[in-house]
Amino acid sequence: MIIDIVKVFLPSVTAFAIGIAITPFITHHLYKYKLWKKQSVQKTIDGREATISASLHNDEVKKTPRMGGLVVWWSVAFTALIFWLVSYITKTEIFTNLDFLSRNQTWLPLATLILGGIVGFVDDFLGTQGGAGKGGYIGGGLSLKKRLLIVGLMGLFCACWFYFKLDINTIGLPIIGDFYLGLFFIPLFIIVVIGIYSGGVIDGIDGLSGGILGSIFAAYAGIAFYQNQIDLAAFCAVVVGAILAFLWFNIPPARFFMSETGTMGLTITLAVVAFMTDSLGGGYGVIVLPIIALPLIITSLSSLIQVTSKRLRNGKKVFMVAPIHHHFQAIGWPAYKVTMRFWIIGVICALLGMTLALIG
Image 1 (cartoon, rainbow, N blue to C red):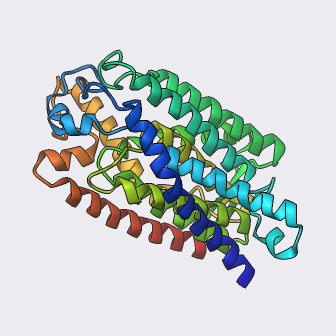
Image 2 (image 1 turned 135 degrees about the horizontal axis):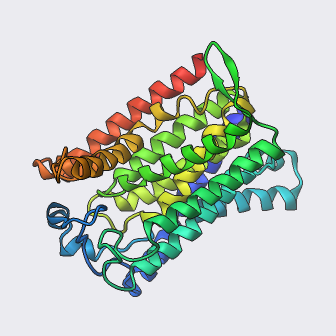
């Protein structure tokens, strides 16, 4: 038990330390090459003029670099590499026990985090090379359709890995137990991946995304630990440590934003972790995901509701502006109040979802 606890917390602290250490290097290059959007949001996702959104993003914000998500997945990757190398070189029992890289628990989520981070980096880089992209909404970079296609393909690959490689075709439901889905497991997996990815739009206020995603991965670290998936618990804890390092520099005034470089890899990995803590681990990781990740889901739904309302009700809006965190800003809440109240909600949702998963 003691070694398991150390295996979870020591790599997490290491990831935090690495994140703090590498941030000056990353920040220097982000500012040196002026890797920020050159133009504020001009249009909403449905092509209308984004007058309120534009007013919430002033010149100072425009010159805050994107790609802060590099801190997160670089920290996770370096931490995993360090513990693996030390274990491989020394071949001592204590360091072997601390190595959390394992084919059956952490290879897939680590791969999705890094691959998603790379794709997100490309998107962010393209978005910093000129003005707003087609439609004005995405600010350059890959179009929304292309990003959804890439995320869907990554989800398909992961779904096939679960279904064909790991022989997983069920999800866990309280009382019922394993609920058989057969081939329907694959489309469900893809839908969950895309749905959680869409919640990445929460990265819109200093400190908001880091606090929410940190609490979510902490909850899944607890679930995985309870289910004796110690390597996966350690991986989730490492992600939390890396996010906290990012958050150290992202709290107001933010030195950089997470952007797609961070949110794409983290949201896809979150979906993978949810399925790994489900029937594969003898738990209910998927059914509690809407609770643990409720802030992401609400954020995504608010945008969907806004677009649907304007299309079906002749331009009438439900919110002053979407996503919902910007709505609260528009009605007069200071950004720090929105962020901290979202943090509180995120922690409560994480605790509730983790509790239900443990007693389910």
